[in-house]
Length: 83
Image 1 (cartoon, rainbow, N blue to C red):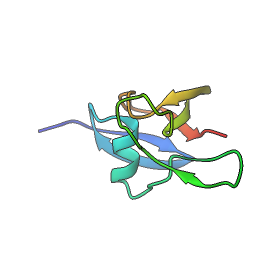
Image 2: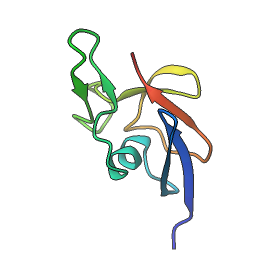
Image 3: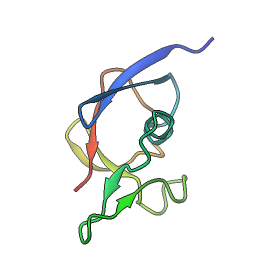
Image 4: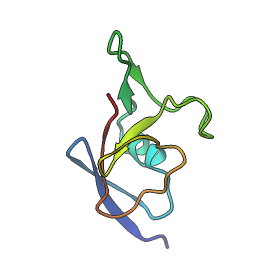
């Protein structure tokens, strides 16, 4: 059985299994948009899922431009939309 962990995404707690990517955990929690575009505020989510497209970039513990599809979710992380 997998260990459950928790982190926050835009201040909202997200529960996931240890080892999941941030993108997978956030999407599994019911939130599809990981960020919004600079122009037009269009919602963006995972596109390629392998770290090439940068559509899923977020701020992880204050560090901007992190590809959420590549980063493993860790307990107590603070994730925010990239702006």
